[in-house]
Each structure stands twice: as C-alpha cells, then as structure tokens.
Length: 441
Image (cartoon, rainbow, N blue to C red):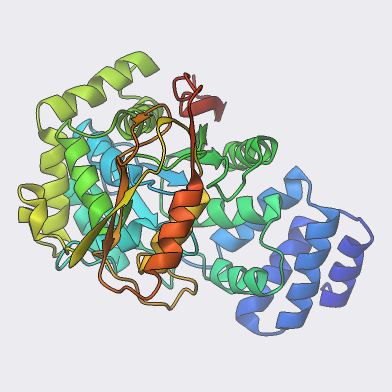
C-alpha cells in the first residue's frame, strides 16, 4: 500500500504516478486517511511538474468512479452532452440542448453555477419562475426519458472527489493546471452516462483560458482523455473576445435564448449554438455529415420543435412554461439606464471581461459560490464590434435594482468599448478550430 508522503515526493521529483497510486490518493478522500494538506501538496506538485496522458486519464477515472456513474442504458437513443469552459453572455446550452433533443439526441446535462465574471447555466435557468435544478438522479432519468433532455446541477453522488479537490484547488492557487482542469471537467461529464461529448473551449479576453495556445492544449487534453475512456469527443475552440449575443445576465439571457429558438436571435449566438448542436447530432450518428447535421438543426428551429422542447423541459422541471410565449413573465429590473457614447466611429473592440465583471457588480454574478444573485439585472449591448456609433448613441442598457455599484459598473463598461474612426473590419468568426477524438469524422 502506498503512503501519501511517498506519492507526493515522487511527483515533486518529477516522477510519473501509477494508476494505483492515483486511485489510492483519490480513494483516500472518502476513507479519510489522506489529509487535506497532503492533497494540497500533491496538487502543487502537479501544477509544477505536470502530468502525462496516462496520469491524467487515471486521475479522471478515479474521480469519476469516486461516486455514481449514471447508467442511462434503459433510455433509448444516443446520449450526448456539451460543456463550455465559460464566457460572458454564453447561453448556448439553453439553445442547443432543445435543438439537439428535437433532432433526436438524448441530452443529459449536468451544469454549474457562475463564479466571477462568467455566468452559469443553472443561474440562468433559476431565473425562470419555479424552475428546479436540484432533481434526484431518478428524476433526472425520468425527465430525460420523457422530454429528451434534462438540465440539473451536480448532485452529491456525481464525482464527489471533484468537489473536494476543486475546493482545495481554489484555496491553494492550483486551479490553472491543464491536467487538473481536464480531469475535473471530464470526470463529471463522463459520470453522467453519456456516449459522446461536445466541448466549447473558449479563448480570448473573457475566457478562463485567455491564450489561444492554452485553450488548444486543454481541448486536446480533454479529447485525448475522452478517447482513452472509450467516448467520442469533439472540441470547438471559440472566441470570447467580446460577449456572445447581446444580453448578459440571467433572465435577460433566457429571454435571448428563447428569441434564438424562435429564429430571432443575434447572428453570433445563433450561429455558434447551431454549430454546437450540429456537432451533437453528428456525434450521435443521426446525420452523415456536419453539413447535413446543421440542416437538421436549422429545421428544428424553423418548424418550432426546438422551442416546444424547451417549453416541455421547463414544465417537467417545475417552471412556468408560459415564459416561452411571454418572456415578460421573467424577473424584470426596476430601472433601465442607458450608457451613451461620447464619440462617433465604429466599435473596434469590446472587451468581455469588464462587461462580465460589471454585470457581476450589478448583482447578476457572484464572487463566492454561496453568494446570492439578482436574476433580473444585467446588460443589453446595443453596439458590438463593427457597429457604427454616432455621438450620443446608447452603447448598452443597464438593467438595475440597486444603485450601490452602478457608477463603478458604468465606468467599467465604458472602458470596455474602444471606438475608432478608421475601423472598418467585420467581426472575426466565432469558431477558431475543431478537434476530434474517438473515431469522429
């Protein structure tokens, strides 16, 4: 039997840990015979020394099997999920999941809450009156069987070791390790009972991994882990240099997601949602090519079947389905304040991170996992990169309830905009690259 101190020393000195050593350390969390400070030391050693492919796969598998690995074998059809590394205005899950489900994919989605400048799918769904994200695993399966998709939060049974290690990583400055990130993400996703996974790995100012090369390495690592564990995985590397869509917040993002399902959403958001949904359909084997998969997805929007799936999901999870027809039933802020431009030209740059941080200051986000949020507040962007601006035009609307941080938030948003008289370029495509693993075409 290994000793924790020997495992720590081995990694500290640059050695590769065996699956047995990694498994013993992870099992030690539940046994209680590996102390927090010992895992903290090992995490730092991993950050400094790294992990090879075999170690990363072993860590993923040990974390995945630390709890329940959901068996969805009794539910017909391929099960495919999507994961995003997070961004500002990223509400694609609300759009692509109903689209993919309407196209015949079973979509079991376990999502997270927002933290810092990036929003979380659970917070957005939680702005729908009555919507429950705390279903049991049995109810999770029932909803998936009835509706074709389900969207809940992580339960205590799914990858409990990840929850323990994530808290330690957050407290010990060991979050930004690609092997640890990959194992954390993949252990939770593979425990859902899926057959395939589509990854949206973001790069740019508002992304968790701002540098493109880091985002690419993370995407490659997760694809490799998925392949080694017998899953089909596709990763799109996408831009987060400006917010996605025009709404940033919670209820306002749900409203924009509903607009997309009606075929009325912003081009960048609609395009990426269809791209990701098409990858899910292709991964599920329901279309012979990505072009045909996208055509299938577009038809679900055109014929209203994707919107109907979202309506059914809301009803199944206790929410008010009438919000689909009347988004005015969603929480609304008491005041709307316009932020006017003091100059003319075109928007040459719109930095995502300050927009996300300003929205957080207004109350839409949280600085700690247990912080409360205001589902009604947010920002509506009227001008984005490439848009013409005249002096006095409203750059965005701030939807507010509390004036406490309004001045600071307004300053941050104003600083996020760069307007240039000579700028005359179209926005860059959202999708930068596509990576595949597990025999995907």
